[in-house]
Length: 107
Image (cartoon, rainbow, N blue to C red; front, side, top):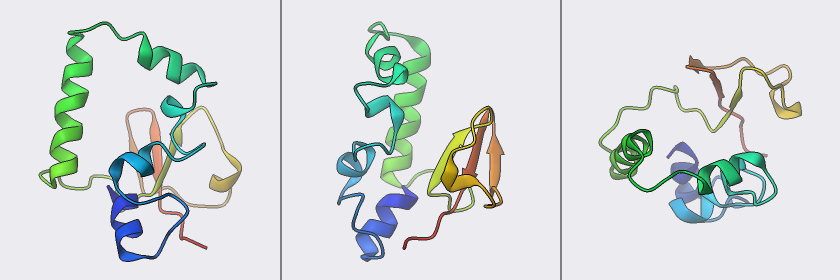
């Protein structure tokens, strides 16, 4: 949602406009990249999966603005077991579960 707000403000244009476009922007979120393992894992979730249902409810609440931002305004995140090049030298804002969250300023 922080990316959506940045895009709506005009500060960032390369992610697209709107929640769906930003989530599905190329190479931004691995679950939407067809060649990534997380995409296959997402497609393999069985209908009625309780954990997926919880995730959907959380996503709906976030999209409606009903959730506080526990990431401190983060625009980027990665698994704690990874270190993408964009994260080198950038202090994380939050650690939630196995994810680190960052605010990477638009260029």
